Amino acid sequence: MSEHQIIFKPENRTVSAPAGLSLMEVASRAGIHINASCGGEGVCGRCRVELLSGQLRSESGPGTFFTTEEYAKGFRLACQCFVEGPAEINIPPESRADASLYAQAEEHEAITLDTLNPLVRNLTVELTPPTEGDNLADYDRLVLTLDQNHNLAWPQLELAALLEMPTTLRENGFSARATLFEAPNQPARILELSSTQAAQPLYAAAVDIGTTTVWARLIDLNKGQPGPARGDLNGQISFGEDVISRIVFSGKGDGLARLRERITANINQLLDLLLTEAGLSRNSLALIVTAGNTTMSHLFAGLTPQNIRLGPYVPAAATWPFLKAAELGLNVRSSTPLLIFPSVSSYVGGDIVAGVLASGLYKQPELTLFIDVGTNGEIVVGNQDWMTCAACSAGPAFEGGGVKFGMRAAPGAVDQFYYNRADRRHTLAVIGGPGEKPIGICGSGLINIVAELFLAGVLDQRGKFVLQAAPNLIRQGEDGVEYLLRPQAETGLDRDLVLTEIDIENLIRAKGAMYSGYQTLLESVGLTMNNLERVIIGGGFGKSLNLANAIAIGLLPELPIEKFAYIGNSSLTGATLAALSRSLWETAGTIKDGLTNFELSETPSYMDYYMASQFLPHTQSDLFPRTLARVRGEAAS
Image (cartoon, rainbow, N blue to C red; front, side):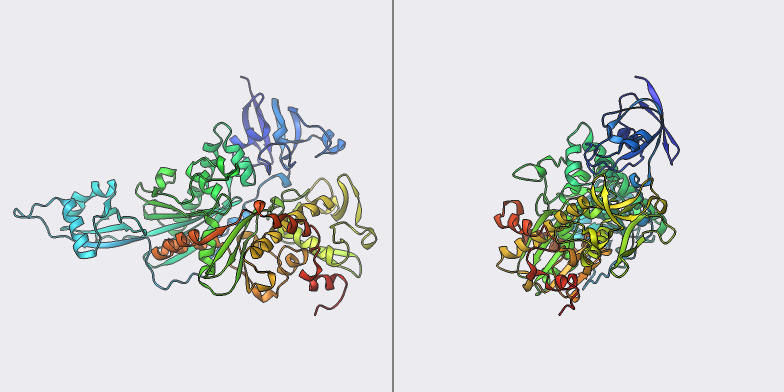
């Protein structure tokens, strides 16, 4: 089969590709990211590229995603174009991923432990040397000493430790440092035997495997000190930006292996970076604890997730057996254990169990709503006595999906917006600072824009523009009625930056899925929003969430602001706590078993609540009295 040279701009990378291969696949194989919310199915329109020269066969023409003029200029969908000859391709800013926001190390959230009892520890063992009258075998001598002197009955010995044992014992006068892994309900394991004389750094890594981002941090187990965290975009996003797209892709050919390779590479790169910054070797890592949603955990382990999306929605694993990190492709020593946080159901995963652990919800008397806002928004309601949970299929709007100029939070994304009723003008702020030109709208920016326009009377409760409120900015566009955010000359795009009524509809559906989920869970236990005493928001999205605006659109319940708390990356914090405490790792299992899962799609009242939530902020005015008073220009009581 003939090969053709494809040049990708602005990277200026030249890739050799066979005829007939899709441009999306060519880029993916070369490690060049092009946005694709739908995983290359041709339905999201986010893999927009520009054919500068050459030959491509395109299976989509002007229409849904391009005007006739744009198509004539060479704009195409990468997933719908196929190599026919040499070509030069430009990937515009809105189609590229930017991981720069995750390049800076982040300090850990506040972590408090009553006692330090990590899952891995070093123990000095003093053995009685053998004599002619006492020729007990080395291994038997070791385990007998551990049993008699340290209350460790017949711990398992890893092969690496067994091979080290004869030499280590004799070189150190039958004294040795044993590196022990001790998890609840499992036999203790001796991971390594080493000299007691040399310094022995002992570290764990906590990893949050998110659908969009991956975060990791090192933890000094000797001192009980977590270090700063590093993050990166999840490399799997080239195959789809939501779990359903990735499940579908995993079932195609070598899709599962490719998805697993991407996430393994992500984690290895982050661990290498953290170890280099700390001046440590890979041998210093004695434990890895991961937390992720059910699909992400399956893909990392190389376990098929196909049944997660098929009734009766049964994952292959909810709790995980003892695993070794090296066997899953991580670049650490062969004996390093790997723990994966347990899941509750197909769509309430280990990241939520870790989040509940980090939040302390499970041990507090206050009735609490815990929220992780995202494509598959998860919610927990409860306190120290009981907990219920559910997953809301909110869709990708909170991460820029389904929005004409939607994008993840990255330089060039509009994240702040202010509307002045007096002069009918607005100002906006862009991630990256004053010199950065806007190229799209991130999830938090979308919420802020819609809230400001609604509160100013530019949008009505149906999410439709009120023409007379801003006649200079509201107009008929190619996708219906739209609001002009910035003209082309003031953007980094080749066209105007606008917000459409379709974008607003998608946001209303997403926020409605979340809010009706809260209502359904509360109703299931005979409670209402008025009974809530706390609302805890976890996850990366919550960091940039404007609480007042999230309430104004009906994403969050209308409660006093002091009842809300943001706890950062609760999944990563939960994994950190588990590494530092055997008892907290055991508590994670108790949390998982104590969460009662509700399938919202099978709960009749959910759809009623969902339909009622498809307005700004809601059809029930008594749920949002202060917000509606602001819309009317009244002073909220």
